[in-house]
Image 1 (cartoon, rainbow over the protein chains, first blue to last red):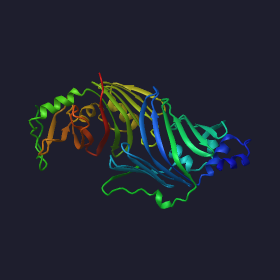
Image 2: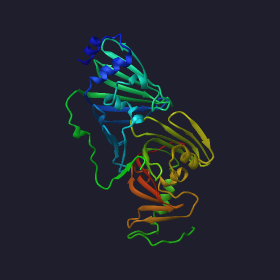
Image 3: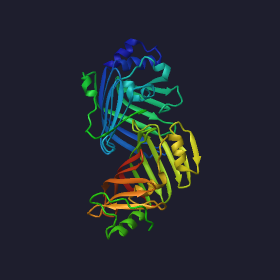
Image 4: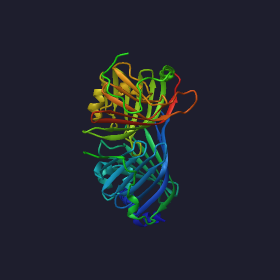
Length: 200
Length: 192
């Protein structure tokens, strides 16, 4: 499995390099997800579920189901967010600030992880490995992101923001490195929907 | 009630309320402790965007509104206050206070959000102050409110349970080139 490459790669490498090696092994990643957002009082504030696909370089397809129905698609150049309830599509460039969002760790550039995050890692038992990423820039969406891998497969992403609210993204039915056509990363939406280009 | 210049009515609409209107208004006004979740989109020349409404809790005139970025529910903005006070906490934790809620929201987020009036409009009610005009369709359902230069269109209704009045599921408020659209995915009455 992927985690063997990690062993071959030698654990002495620092955490950022290990994580980059692990993520680079993900040419494509697809999974169903359940996302729970927990307020700082511990109360569950929002739950959504759906499915996602990611493909290097920079492509991802993110569909969350009703009641929070939403489609977020990146073709590697632009990110489009289609909201069927709002009947609106917003399109913006896949630039650096969006790169900071965790989804792009799965499809974006991972060579410069160490410049963007302080990365630490620890092993839990013999098949779970956790990486904790702390953004170096203050105005990131989150203050800490923890990625948990089970036998080299990303199982969970746990993000904490500056209001100490936590968003836990758990993945299931994970398929690694299946081939996914680039055409999948195209958003289709009905005519008559408002299209808003950032900065337009 | 006050009269405003009467433009011609759009076809099929009347500004004469149905007989049940006073009951409907009273039912909606009685809903003064509530929580909703949904989505918000603001479209205006300078800065458009959308956000998830993680929750909007209202106790009489006090609101506690938490918005987050549509993506991954991160990057929270919290608006907490009353008609004449607001405390705004941005995603990076910075906190601002003001006695002018709408002005502070505009300054901090770039969005023109008529928050005080929205607390009424979102329940299908007119805001307390400001001339208004009501438009109903042939079945007596509220189609739009015109108030303070805004046109608030009631696109879809939500009737969750018998003891709750019909409440908006989607509203679109426009004023000139500004547009605020809210999709409400869940309404819940709260105990005071």
